[in-house]
Image (cartoon, rainbow, N blue to C red; front, side, top):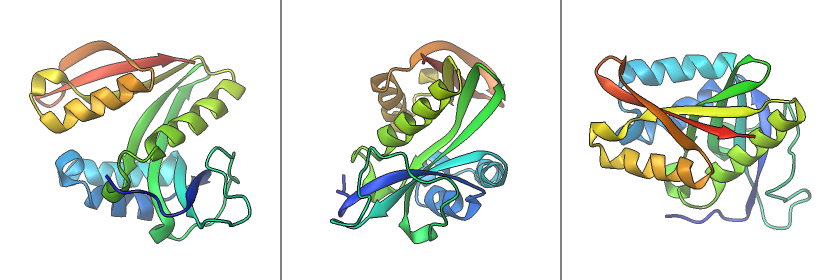
Length: 177
């Protein structure tokens, strides 16, 4: 879709519910149910957040593969994408939310967010990363793209749960780290 002007870096931060809310509002076909959007925004205040941040061309540290700086304060308008990480066990973690601003879809931001998270998790000894998304039996074409993205990033479908999400099929996908 759109190209990122300049480069971007991924930063680990806390409590970016403002960024999560703004990005989710731009993506109603994926996050258009108010109750779920509210739950994601509340989760952003609790879970570790990884955000992709625009870095102007030629700026010091303009390295999209760079580690970022934990705790950096970033204006919400500069946040291009957000990933919320839920880790309940020492050897596994879950992508609770991954959302990228519409105009920056297909620019590598989602992959970069995942890569940074995976690097951090490997360093902690985490062995498995999972994600839940709408299952294929839903027939929703927007989520065909979502499942294809996760598959291309190395996630494997494990099981579709028809009733986990109040009538919407949930597909569990995992990636060994």
